[in-house]
Structures are given as C-alpha cells and as structure tokens.
Image (cartoon, rainbow, N blue to C red; front, side, top):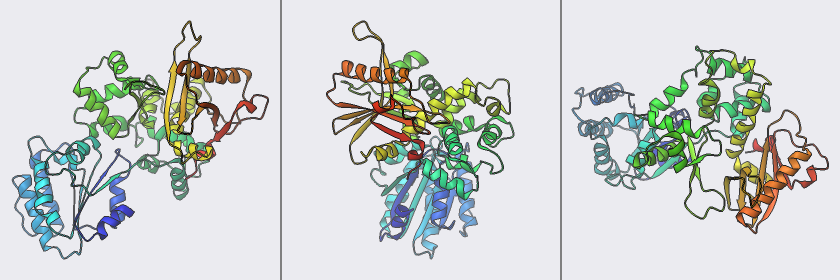
Length: 465
C-alpha cells in the first residue's frame, strides 16, 4: 500500500504492475488503496473473444462517464478512446486500473503493442497518469511486461509481487473474522490452505477447522470443492502440461531434478518444459534450489503450494466421495503421516522466523534439502529435509516433528540425527560446524538425549511477525 501510494503521489506518470498467485488478494489490495474509486477501471474477461473484450471495454468507458458510444475495432482504437476519456477527466491524478490484463491478450489481437503505444505515446508524456495493471497469470506478466524486449522494456516503475499471508498474518485475520481457532487449528488450516486470503475468507466461524476442511474441500456444495481445475484452467491456456509436471513433483517431497522429472513423469524435454517450470515458479507453485555442496548446476524443483499438495494427497484420491473424509480420518495413520510432511512445508515457508529464533537473521544462508543413497564405502543413506547452510561456517541440520504434545526424543532419534551429521560430513567433506536443530509444534521433553540438540524452534516461533 505504501508503494502504491508513493506512485500516486509522484510528480510524474507512473506504471505499476501487481502480480502473484490467483486468490492472493491483488484486486482487493488495489481497490482498498483507492477506496474503490478510479478514473477508469476495467477487468479482462475470461475465455472471451477479442471482439467481446473490445465491446466490454467500450461499455466500461460508457458506464464510467464517457459519452462517445462507438465500439473500437482494435486495441489501438480502444486505447485511443481511453486517452480521450483521460483528457476529459478533472481528476488531479488520472488513476487507471486494468485488472486480469492477461485475459485481454487474445491471439493476434496486438494487445501488447497497443498497450506499449498507449504508455509511450500518451501516458508517460504526461505527469498525471497512474497506470496499474494486474494479473493472476504471472507467466504472462513476466513474459510480456517485465521481460518485454520491445516498447515496454523497463517501463514498469513499480513492480509489486504479492505473496501469501504468514502464520502471523493468518492469526490476525482469524481474530478479525472471529474464527476462535486455537494456534493448532490455525496451523492445520495453513498446512491445507497455505496463507491464501481467499481460502481463509471462506472459513466459517461456526465450524471447527476440521469441519471447515470437510465442508469446503470434500462436500460438493463447498465453495472450494472444484478449486483445483478452476485454479489451473484460469492461469494457463493449456494446463495439461502444467498439471502433469506438478503431479509428478507431488510424488517426491524433496523435489526432482529436470532429468528426474523427464524420466519419472514421461515429460518431453526442450524449451516447452523450461517454460512450464519457469511459469510455475513465477506463480509460486514450485520453487527451485541448488542441493547443498553441489559442484554443478543441478537445480531441484519442488512443489510448494499447500493446497495443491493436499489436493493430490487426499481430494483427488477420495474415490468414495466421503463428504466427511477429513473428520473420519482423525488420528489415523493416513492423516498423521501427512501432518508431518505438511508441517515441513510450513517451516520452509517461515524460514525467516526460524532464522530469527536461531539469532541468525542477519547472516546470509542457503536453505535446501539434502540426501544421499546407501553405498558400500559409507554405509546407510541419509536424508535431511531442511539444511541451513550459513555464511558464518555453521550448518544447521533441522529435524521437524509435528505432535500434539512435547516431543520425546528417543535413543533411535538420537542415533538417526548423529548418523545424518556423520554422513553429511563424510560425503561432502565440509569443514563447517554442524548444529542439530529440532523444529517441533510443542517443544521437546528434556531428557538425556535432548542435550545433544544445539537449538530448538517451536510452532509459536513460526507465528512471529
């Protein structure tokens, strides 16, 4: 909001682009900033022809006070009408908000060229225009606006990437909504929905977290019952390739290399796969990281969207159509095993809070997973789900545990952690100090094994701002 207001107060015309995952609240943010009042506002139509888009663009001009009624024949003509409308406006700053812009770019419509002409030939030549564009199809925004090599190259003056809420913000939102959730319930909802405001807005304060999950995701009348198809169909014109990639990534929680993706998913190699991976990263569905101590470019791609992970684990496989599936599986192995994996994902989404608790907020770090297979020379394999490689010559091996009570470290846990440290040292040859860190929901019980742990982080620490 501060950035948008700064752009509004500028003595020059400014070009603002707001982007991020669908349902993250981009449109709401912009409308709240301007109290729902703009010189001109238009939202692109989903799955509409170019003719339909132009007709509705003209209708929007008329509804907002433009007296001329002709329908533009192309986007150059449409933006010319907008220029005329802006000239007639008495607003001190002419604020133009174009939402869901990617939907306006129909094939062979020359929309981007017309937008370039509008900005370069008209808006930037004045000092009183604030152009705000927005879109959930982040891949389109990146390709056509941010990486534009034509007339829009470096024209965006404010780029705002809107991310999901943190646990801290979800707790604040839950309080405002009077959801009366405990932190354990907020954590559960976060593991299912992530910090996507639209999903949290759908939660019913009259239901528990478990009841909400059943109602929203497993009941055909629930608001989010068909969310998966709607989500990906709205973002990508040809979603089949994208869904195939995320479905393959969903089978391996620590992620896959490009070659593993191709082999295990039966995917075609080449530029198309590169585009899909880049677009999924830009839309915050997957992340890319380099494995610890990797000597070459061996990028690993990991599915990180909480809702998508939950969908593949439970919703897609709910073949019996049990509308109370989640409640019926309370305290069962199928649910308990998922909670541990989902909690790991929440920890990855709150690395800054973990670093804050460890007292290393100002230290440069690299966050990744690490694993090694068994071999005759070194012995059994090892897997570290979160490794914090620090610039101060320390490595934190993080072990994450989701429990309803304080976690009791056993002899087996102790031996497992020691072996991970030993295998990391012998395999990588690192000279850095190795610290063992426990990240748990309720802390750890003090016993003879807890003394081996250098540092602790609890879920309460993840709720910090």
